[in-house]
Image 1 (tube, rainbow, N blue to C red):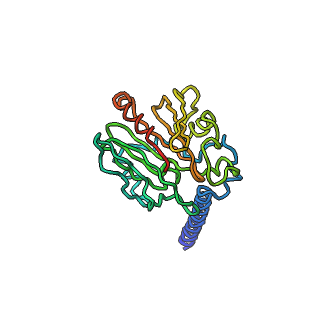
Image 2: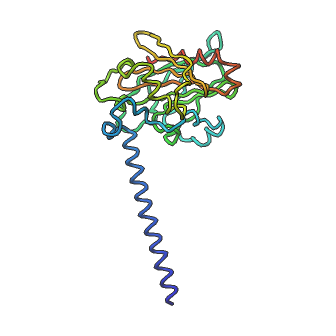
Image 3: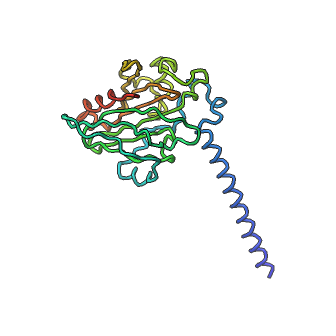
Length: 257
């Protein structure tokens, strides 16, 4: 009899402890969601050198097109945005105005962006559980040529004094920008990896363009509204060798409209 009572009591205690632990975990997760949505960012990351709030190695989020589709089955507001192919077989993607993006409560509408890809590139589902959190707005991939991603991060992570119509020049110089977010994208220090660094102007908006190696990645950065836009194109060694020209053209086609 004593043994039975003791066993029942222990099970009750363990069950109650599990409930308490679950509540604590959910509470911590909720606080984490609030921080990612911008709550308290001034206290956490007031300076540019803090970098983007991304999981290390955004490039590593691609574990294979099929695997990614299975692991990231939940998708917020995925709406096709690809045009029909032009005479050269290239298609233009424009972020649909109706796309929710899964960026959480408190986000203002995202200014649309566009880019071009050859025939055969398709959108890869992204969820809030994706590496990089809620700031990964879009992924595209072609199993033979490479992959791309779009990161949309609030400039509030860098400074509270930039206002609501930010230009990339206000965020910092090309050197400052790549040193700030480069390690967050490739998962390691960018020192000695930046092969080229250029500036371009389109319709009055400045874009910073970088090529890094290794890993093989092309990055285009700009700012609009109250956000920093980061467009990355990456590939493995063989894809890079065979399709570098197309990958470069994809990277240079990015525009915020």
